[in-house]
Amino acid sequence: MTEVRIATRRSALALVQAVRVGDLLCAVHPGLSVRLVEVASSGDLDRKASISELTEVGAFVRSLQEAVIDGRADLAVHSMKDLPVAGPEELVLASVPERGSPFDVLVGSSLDELPWAGLVGTGSPRRVEQLLELRPDLRTIELRGNVDTRLRKVADGEVDGAVLAEAGLDRLGRAEMIAHRFDLAQMVPAPGQGALAVEARAGSNFAELAAAIDDNSIRILLETERLLLAETGAGCRSALGAYATWHEETIRLDAFVADEQGRRRAVVFGETPEAVVAVARKELRL
Image (cartoon, rainbow, N blue to C red):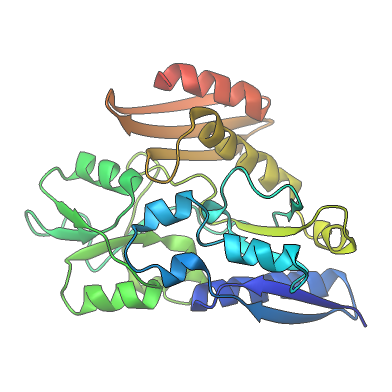
């Protein structure tokens, strides 16, 4: 029996995602056993820096990557939107096994029922810009902590509502908390939102093992979103949204950006990630 050790953060959502990857691996590799290696990330330990800043520098993934590099784990499971576009050369993105809902949701209140000048929890510049485009009267504040902590702050009345990722609530069985689901016209998701990413040492047997659960059709779409992120030099502290889907045999990319030039949106099509991103940069004036 072969054992695979999966590095994961200790949050409830991270553990659920790691278990899901383990289940997918066991389904295609009979006799495989899975052991989770829980790792404290620097992002979880840092209570002062903003979530967007920590994500941009890879604070939520770096400790997991180090566990694979130094041999404490064989694979690392991340939320794709936490994974910087440039990673350690020792590692490869071995698998993109699945993508949940990419959309953002509001908990605590529907968008229309939020009070005038209501306070909404979110530290994401992308979410803030698009939320204020819909409701310029609203105020925003960053909420730290895991999903349950954020939901509790809404329930306790610290904020009137909070913007979260639908995929996280779905995976934790908390979808009943959703009061409003933002569609693409309202809020373009973050690149990679809702998707899982599995890293392994380059050239290792475990990279090959994880490749068996890769979904190439999803990978191409995520490459498109992350290429826009890479080519524009935008990080999580930038207000950039990108969501790619298949439109027949071509790629459709919905994109949003807000900077000193103002807020812009674009919907572009192309046959390859490179072609789509080239058109998107032109349309968005990036």
